[in-house]
Image (cartoon, rainbow, N blue to C red):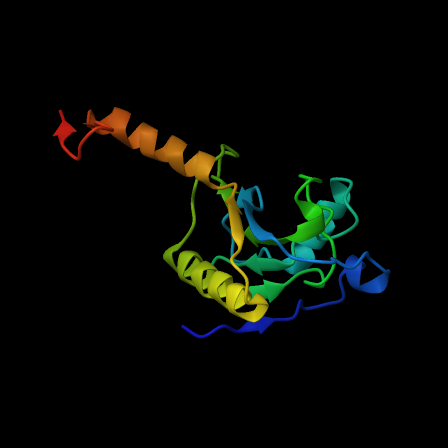
Length: 167
């Protein structure tokens, strides 16, 4: 897959007003949008959603949509108003649409297309900046939770000392 980033379908709030420029980039913060994994959710929808939550428009620099399309959010050279202020000044924020099931319960629900697109995007960012990136994947908690639920459901438990499975 080649990298193809599309612009948002209309102007975002962060495009209309001056936002602080990032001086350097140390890493990438990957997070869920905390919405259902719906193909209609895009940068414009997240711009409205983030504004309603009290942020200055879209907090994400890139959005990975359900079908694997990558959309530009706020200008990637600017500082995000991401929920983790200690990471915002030197991190690029990538949001993967999803993180909630239809009952509004937290759930790791990435599509295969999203995972492929995310890998391509991360590689492109690392190549463009020509630096090793610190990747902070905030989705890991839900993935670990889903894996633990799977183990509990199947009765399988993984021993950390070796690769044998105990049933």
